[in-house]
Length: 559
Length: 78
Image (cartoon, rainbow over all chains, first blue to last red; front, side, top):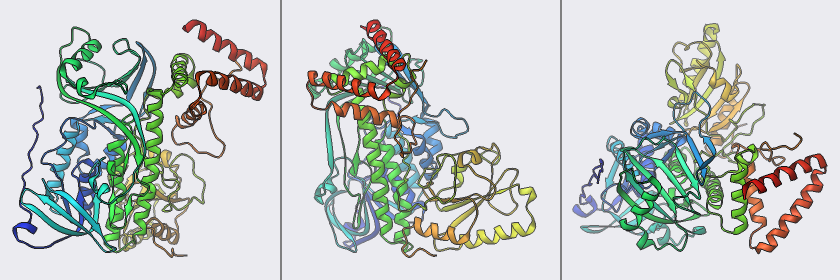
């Protein structure tokens, strides 16, 4: 194997509940140290919350598995402190090409507009992502990690959840105020709690082969319908770091999952595709089927489900790990406010509502892609092929070619946390929208400055034109907002230069004003997860306070 | 050319944040209309759809152009 990655082995330590024979209670226990569980742990720890993270395994993801990490995920990972590492190691791409037989019929660009820091997508083996998440966790003293700890039983009452955990030294019991369940698609805890997850199974099988080879293929996603090297089925090709390429063959429902993964059957398929002149080594082979399904509710009392445990999608669109990391992004700030007594558990209902909406959108889009890529009836296949044929000449048909609608963040337009617009704005940055990034200051990016706390952006026009009285006014306000129970950080947006002594976003390229449709005096309230909470054409302190309360699901909003 | 071949799907009152969404809404509804029909029934459904939509469009200059583009596509292709 030309494998550059060395699997770490995590040390098992006897838990103090066993070695010291004592009861353990923790504010937050997270079960499952995959990308979603670890992201949740990092986010909570960065907010000062202590967390116990337990996992039944002792190493990172075996095999590359999840490979595509979308722009929004990278922005979340930036906030968690590892975005740069993921982008540096990963393969960035924006262009996807679709072929029918041998001819290109369509291509898309995930990020056609300039002045965004992160690319549309980065490909990176899941084991690298998990290693970087673990490295970040180790920098955070608030997190205790326990490996080879398997949860055998879960119970809860209105005040706490209790777990029975099995280790190489036997079982122990712990209780916690909040249990975050990130134990994956099969979710043993979901089963233990007898909770339903509903949806449908797709009757198709796909073969994943990761191969190591020296080729100068373009760094693009390529999808073939009915290629000569694999007739009547689809094939997907993705670049990964370390000269690894992911090939995904549609096999059909009748394929034998045991036979198909044998090298003597896999290698000829790849040779058919690559031709006789390209040498390669097999790194990892897997066969998969998939389901699209979700739990009807993600929060159950003291127990909160995130990632694949709560919802699963088809892999077309890379919406699995990406949506799971966005679950973590949505949940962590809300859970911290609830733990600190600054919000009620009603805020956790909004986690389920917002991420349930996102799950529906992800399931809808990935199901549509699946139905286009692998049509289920002769008439469906005919429409698909006619669309591909017409796409060569007719623009409307190109828009219908669905070779995967890749992961993008949801607009929570129906969220109860939004303050509905009362003023007119152009563009897409409506309440509930994931905030667009933009270049600011000398060499910096909007989203790097936001996140963590609520942020209030106020367009003040020219810093040079600001009077001492105005500066004193904003300075007082910044101090007041920062001292609130739920702190809000004030950012002045200017067109020219920084305002001395105040947090300023200088809109050097004009993109911020363009993307948010800002005018002088416009105000945006941004949530800790960088979604828009409210916006106005003029600043009003009372309305800002009320919008913050609403975004925290606090009853009895001020009037 | 009177026949519009640019992307043109929309639904009154619905705001789209992704440009592919209205077309995908249409395509899903189309395939759903054929769900569990035999090939012959699907054929008939397509005929009914052409008649309904033809009447809705009404403008024969547009329809003749569409017939022509569609027929040329079939004859070139197979």
